Amino acid sequence: MFYRGKFVDSGDARETGFKRQRLMDQGSSYYGTPPGPSYMYNAPPPPPPAYSYYPPPFPVVRLRGLPFDCTEAEIVDFFHDLDVVDVLFVHKGGKSTGEAYCVLGYPLQIDFALQRNRETIGRRYVEVFQSRKDEYYKAIANEVYDSQGGSSRRGVTRARSFDESKDLAEYTGVLRLRGLPYTASKEDIMEFFKDFVLSESKIHMIANSEGRPTGEAFVEFASAEHSKAAMAKDRMTLKYRYIELFPSSHEELEEAASSGY
Image (cartoon, rainbow, N blue to C red; front, side, top):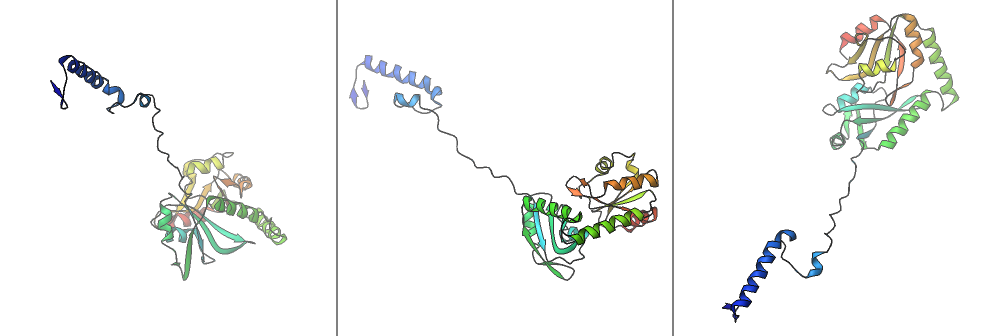
């Protein structure tokens, strides 16, 4: 017979056919790759492609140029279609600096927040910058330090007089909480006051007219003495925020609940 233009006898042809069949039968062991030199059979598989993983950024932006009387509710309205988790105003010597940090719900929302740069709150143009997690936590530490009067003698005097006014206030069994994280729940507040017997029906979370939390809440205690004792938790932290407590009344509670702010 002829094979590639050369005459071979039948014996050689049969042997060639057998060898080809054996190679075809072994093909599955080579994952369909045609056999090559013997040193290729034992070669290690190629290394997998290298992938670089970069964790998503912490979703926080810094605002500058805010009105000095700006409120958390105005910041929430400024980022009205984003998920605002926390707002931290920056103070120096007890006075507003016109800056704040805003923590968002997701890293992808940073780009949308930056698009608000140079938009207005009141009559002020507000600058929006991307920030970092360590800058945000440093600002928290500075706020706690400043609130405790650590920055100056004047701050100590101011803090002391403020505390004395709370001691002299009339206690009615109701406390107002300010500075709550927007993600705080009634269960979180019950854990914050775990030394006191509270029920969820006695905790009132305040929301604005759009139903967004304002960072404030009212808590009804069993007695005026219990609410005064609970003031020992003033400026302690709930999650990552220090909470301010104020003596309040049922009238103030009803007004806040009905105003829808």
